[in-house]
Length: 226
Image 1 (tube, rainbow, N blue to C red):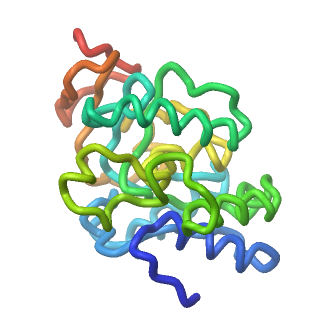
Image 2 (image 1 turned 30 degrees about the horizontal axis):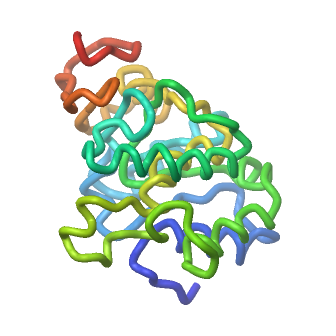
């Protein structure tokens, strides 16, 4: 696939659009330097350890870092909150959800594996339309397909469509908006393996972002006052 736009969203969607009729049984979507963020030190170890779970679960986030809290955008800069709220509502409607869930948990960095069956739950035209937006050929929902090519001062205030989608890939592929917390999810996605512990961040009702300690055994979403 000749595609290198500098953001993962357009590349992922380009692959699905191009290969829709000949997808393998499962696909892992990764990006440059993913090893730093995965649940195991290498891509190969991560994929080998997760394959049995993927067959039964259909979708697996592969990042060790999780974010949870109130939508829009847990732990995002407050300067971006209003933009996230505005443009993400359009994205949610495109996913067939009239309004965002009140609470949300996602695993960071846009690293995941998904079965062919889950991908094919949506028609090719759905992915083609998203590709048009994420490649800049159709008007964006937010401040452009991606903001990482902008200068630092612009990035601090603007939100790209890819930034929204990074948080919602799991919903696109049929998962609930609130994925299980790491203490529950890690044994599900890599049974009988000790995975790398990542950061677990949370933010509610636009309060400052906090980090839950890595050895926290809490299995429900916690409020920012905890």
